[in-house]
Length: 483
Image: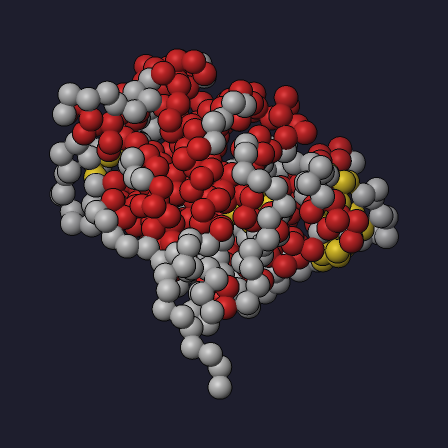
């Protein structure tokens, strides 16, 4: 007969303590991290503005009860909504993630650390407006950037060595945990209260990855992070009331996260929390494509040009082989019918076929009107993926973090074209000098989708000036995005 579990409340799990001590005590001294966070901020908001062109996204935004306006509530950029911070976090988070065009982090687990901006910006804006209403000092945008850096770090460092997808859990669990920690700190909670909040985030049942994979791929993957970051705000606000936490939520025998959801394995860590993740984050600059396919799309664009120069087209292609890494095959190597845009933007064959046919890949190319072109599926059927173990090793190497794809085309006449290999995508840290000017242009394009020229210029003037942005009150910056 097993010994009973002692009913003595333990000290908080070390993982919880480490997260909270980092959030409350770590001083960010990296200018590179703050500069990258500013670029991340504008890129993330720009992705949300582009998503406002899609009714499938906008139908989910706004108050739960139509017409509700919250006094001193958080604004949702690009809209007229003024909401409570929980619902504002959902709306901002859903916008950000809708088109799969915001930043990415690839490791044992994948994810998009800028998903945390939903909770961070909504909470900071709400606090700032209420501070001003009470005659107090508002939060500054530097506090938003610092919270982004720390949320990126928590999510990314846990992801380095721990695969949640391999046990069927979605990576948004890390958005919820990271957002809860930084939002709770932003709310002014004490150390024990923040530990309580973070434990509440872990004790939730967590999302399955069902909606990201065949045969169930669907639009929830576009709002799942909004759901997670808004849940984080809700839990942090509950902890602020004094709601208790669960100190051994990870390690409790039989009932903790490890035993129930992680096959009994503890979380492993490669490095202490610092500024590594923000400094090395991957930006999606050129193409709204799942990140494991970014280099494949770049290679396909190169091949499209070479075929055109030789007087050939996609119709001349007999077979395409994609030499790739294991994670790519596990997530986006997909055959058979594709049911919706969410299905298509997670299919590497689709993301290669479109640029080979049309010389482009835009968010609109995932819509039904384009997908109905029979040439796309015909070409998809002739594309096969093959893992290269060296690519997989370089993908996991912390000094490389490569995301390599090589495309080899065989033509109908038997000619085999030289492989086009792309190792590091445009948004990689190794290509920052090349990528950041294009990231700024992407932001300009997205501003132009929503705002008149004068408003665009007002946003740009602040957003491209590090010192001016950091000093600006949060609510004044967000007000620049109100239509």
